[in-house]
Length: 145
Ligand SMILES: [Zn+2]
Image (cartoon, rainbow, N blue to C red):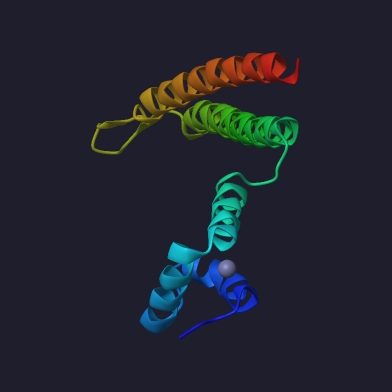
């Protein structure tokens, strides 16, 4: 069966994407074996599809925006964690002072000792967040340059 070049060229994108029927693809292959012009069209299609038409500069700009955005998110997260852990630590020490030491009628000493190590854990969290925040801010400055 002879098919015109125009029909083949209409089908080439489907053939390239391997979404046309077996019958169509065998028809196209038959035609391509004889017609160099259509074969060239297929090659052009391959080149155009393999290289998206995004200029190199634009890709770089988009990438830098995405890394900046990621860094901003990290900075915001460490800031939030700094504030939360500082508040929690302060709260622990305030609670320790507010609750204070009690001596029950049977003579046992009741003291909220657990609040002290918890408070120190929060201080440690605060310090870690502070260091991470500092590192992320520095990285962000380097990216921005
Ligand atoms: Zn042809």
